[in-house]
Length: 174
Image: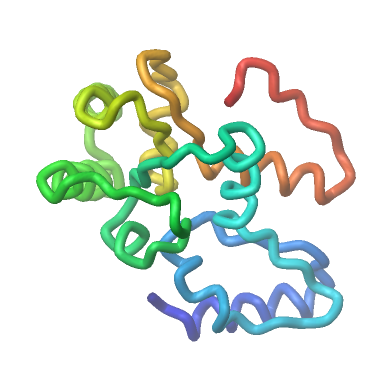
């Protein structure tokens, strides 16, 4: 993870007078304790906001992280976090790579849907946390109701808008 670049960007934001900032990458949050901190700057933590949202909406429910190997291995979502079996995790990583390389979005949506349906059947209707920005692209337009999910990027976006003093219309969103 390019921690040096992240901290350089934080310094630039400080110099610009930014009061709130965020990093829309779950994997980068494994290093959040190493980010530079400044007194008048507030970091909106994607992982912490998503955990709060899930704890409020789905108390005591275990959830499965759908994201990179780094996000899965770092256990940044804590004790209630489950990870997909290795074969599914490999498929998820291949899908993330395909999205990054501008692969067919229709293929990616269908493949993600298939993966989540299979995981859902094997894991007794668990809650999925979509914990990768690339996967957010594939799931949000598809919005299949055959499984429960929370998109960490959606949670982050809502918190960012509210942090700027605006209201958010979340009708129809998890």
